[in-house]
Amino acid sequence: MKFIMLASLIAPAAAFTRASTSATRYAATRAFSGSSALFANPKVYFDMEVGGKDVGRITFELRADVAPKTAENFRALCTGEKGYGYAGSSFHRVIPQFMCQGGDFTNHNGTGGKSIYGTKVISILALIFFVSQHHHLKLNRSIKYFTIETLQFEDENFVLKHVGKGILSMANAGPNTNGSQFFICTVDTPWLDGAHVVFGKVVDGLEVVDTIEGVGSRSGSTSAPVKIKACGEIKED
Image 1: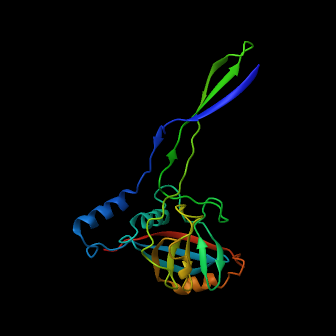
Image 2: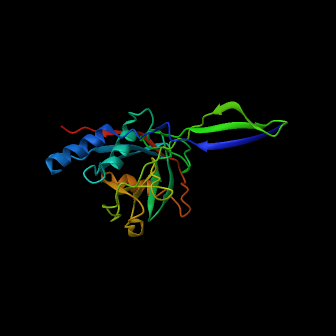
Image 3: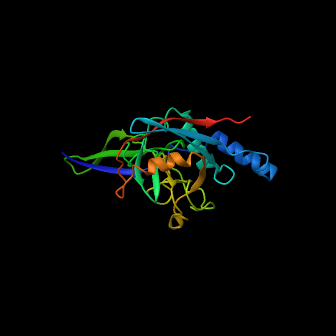
């Protein structure tokens, strides 16, 4: 008996993105007011360790007024409110006079990470047929479903530029592949404009960035482990 498998893609049984409630609310409120002046951009922090020693805090302002979806992704990964995030993860790639990269809290080597933005589920119907001894196709009634998940999101915009030290931007693997990996610039990097989404900047703790940069190398490997010991959001009254 000879088996033939035919696979066909059905209309997605479920295709959705769980957009961030707070990002959506922020954008809607700003659109209604016509101004961002009444709303403060969120601030978040990393408490850093280098070589197992505390080296201080980096504080970021997230530009939710320009890139609300990207800013919300980073904020929620700092708080860990989705059940996963940056706490305990490392900076896996540090190149002096360029940037410090982190955010891979799944594989810890630059190949992983994920955003907060849902899963896109696609159902695939696999129909198993067999050829009977009379050379007629008969359905074996075996139906299998598969799901494909993606935890990346699109490039929101390229309004903000890589204008200098302390700029916070998304690392990616090409267009529209934003997850959780990010980098902090240590110099002007204008060649990254239009390819990586800038969504914030360091507002305090540049000396900590200097310390991290100091254990980097041309290859990106670090001479000592660089770890985000703790992180979260700074609530301002």
